Picture: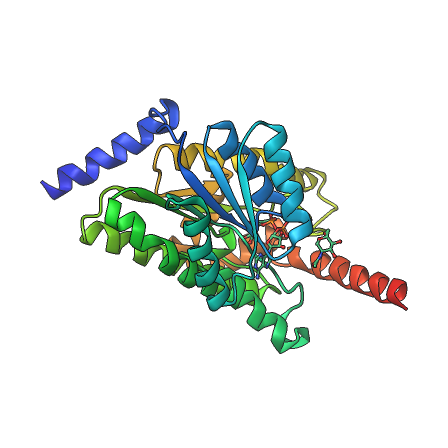
Length: 317
Ligand SMILES: NC(=O)c1ccc[n+]([C@@H]2O[C@H](COP(=O)([O-])OP(=O)(O)OC[C@H]3O[C@@H](n4cnc5c(N)ncnc54)[C@H](O)[C@@H]3O)[C@@H](O)[C@H]2O)c1
Ligand SMILES: *[C@@H]1O[C@H](CO)[C@@H](O)[C@H](O)[C@H]1NC(C)=O
């Protein structure tokens, strides 16, 4: 029976690539998005609004958060903004209570989207920045889930969405803080998903979103460069995986959320390095990384982050 089930789900999930299952209606749901002032968070707010949900926007930057709220109202949607530092658990719990009091109802969809990256490889990276990455990308998931999951479980209705990264499934050089935090986020999310299944809380769904580099500025300058530029055909490599358009990324993630898909990698091609990481010897993966130039792809990002910082220092002076 188990083997039949295994085969059934392989077939069903393959079919779903061609024939999209029906999406669930989310009008009237209350969606809380962290990092709502940023690139993807803002687009998530707009997409959820399009589908008739109301959005609670959390960001520690009140200026950009208000701008997101303004865009949502212009679309005819309802947005409620809160200035919250998700790394501060007291701040998270206090604001969760405040949301419940202000709106008189519970958050039913939690989108943990806030995220940061230090932009320095480990030996150059200030300790505080490494800690910050862990706190925003990993610890904050603990506090928000603790704040909002109890009501979802009580009503057996809800959805927990974690915006991780493909760098939570495989890694590259120079982003130690980020990979550590995103692998942690993936582990946390999966364990939570298992727990909800074991406890048969079938009404609370989970979706793990793992995007490749997106054009939001977060990884500005990052390039998959080919090693050997003398081979003309290799220059095409850069075209194989260009950074994603934020809108495309969020639309794909929304599709997955609306069909209760447990995991989505965007774009699909990134399932390949995920698989080869698990199946091939370490050294085989290293040679494909070298061939693709993905071993050093973060170095150009670190460079451009440094340039930005020194420009900022000059301006400040
Ligand atoms: N941009 C990419 O290439 C990429 C790729 C894969 C995954 N992701 C993930 O997607 C998510 C969104 O990324 P983005 O590109 O929109 O980033 P972004 O930098 O544009 O936005 C991040 C937002 O989070 C907010 N934030 C940061 N720390 C916070 C804190 N402590 N408390 C509250 N808010 C805080 C920031 O103010 C900002 O508005 C992140 O989790 C990121 O790791 C991004
Ligand atoms: C908020 O974001 C804007 C735009 O990125 C930036 O100029 C501003 O300094 C930020 N404010 C805070 C308090 O971080």
